[in-house]
Image (cartoon, rainbow, N blue to C red; front, side):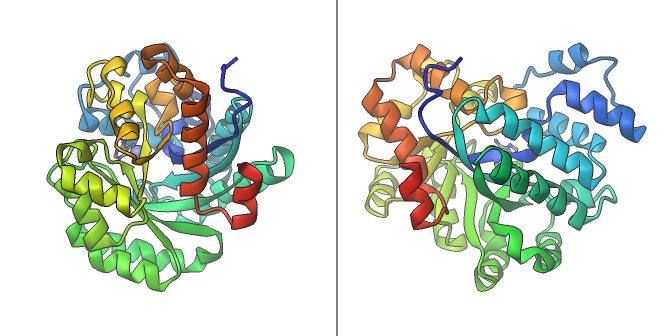
Length: 323
Ligand code: ADE
Ligand code: ZN
């Protein structure tokens, strides 16, 4: 049981595909007649030894092959929601990567509708609120992102916003400016991964070219004091994922994670799990891991939780309930 179970948690950095535990992967593989390049759940888990973001993404995209139907997407997110409810989850803004599925012949609507089914059920059965954030894959062509956004027009009622993820180095945000401008016209909120592996300049580019309201990761911002000052002044939320940073070797040791420096600088930092099935912890586990590695006093834990509420796209009424 997490020490922080009673603290109301808001997840702002959580990839639906990153919640696929090996047990469910094999269940879905059997159900759909798909073969995985691993003999067993243990063998798959043993492959979770990553050297960088790309080495993780290779496995993450390979295992998505088991996700085929609307029911699969429901079952995936529902398993995450049930598990996280026990760790104090109250609100979640879920990233998903439609291009990873439509490129394999899965219908866009089956992906969105299955995930939305799980969120609707979570509202009723678990009291968890949330929404879906469609992420474009930055290492795929911009016109594919633009086509994906046009497909999303049939589901604008269930989409909260758009994001940008996948391989960061060599794939800057700038080329996606037009797609993000179109998303804003459609009434969608905007976020992007930046400053995870790529330098601080990618954070500034995401703010300037894409108009993002939140930055996912952003840890590399510390390399640029002017950027830090801007992020503080503009109160830009940064969704930090320490277990991800450890497993993808952005940091070598959790004790050295720059979370304390980010807080000391006055940045609006919150704690999240990114891809919990792969990185060894859900949102409550993330608080526990930070506490074990760095110490975490009650006031700081409460601040991190409150920053997540403030940085969310929940309604003012819901934010008041979550605080
Ligand atoms: N997709 C899933 N997790 C990711 C991460 N941490 N960075 C970029 N893309 C991702
Ligand atoms: Zn992420």
